[in-house]
Length: 139
Image (cartoon, rainbow, N blue to C red):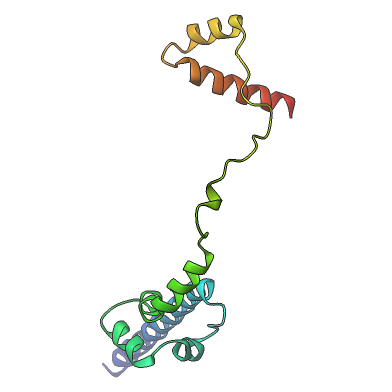
């Protein structure tokens, strides 16, 4: 009976170690996600220094992930950063000069063949396919 108890304790310790490793892996993954937004966050200490630690812990205790808690704690700062990235006015909507050769017309013989083989397609789809096929052949 003593041997079984020791085996059970050993198995439980192994499971605890595995759970701890998976928790650490999860924390590292979440920190990596946070680093995509804020590269200054290298570890938990830096994370807690960049947000209100009490509020962050409160969100985590409520069941949110570190990423979600970070976003909620930092939303004002992150929103300002995103506003800085947004284009001002409508200048980003100006027309651009077309590049490339454009779509060429499908020769009548090719169009007849397309219609025979693929009757469910319309002329615009034939033109797209013909153009893509020509570009592939020329490259």
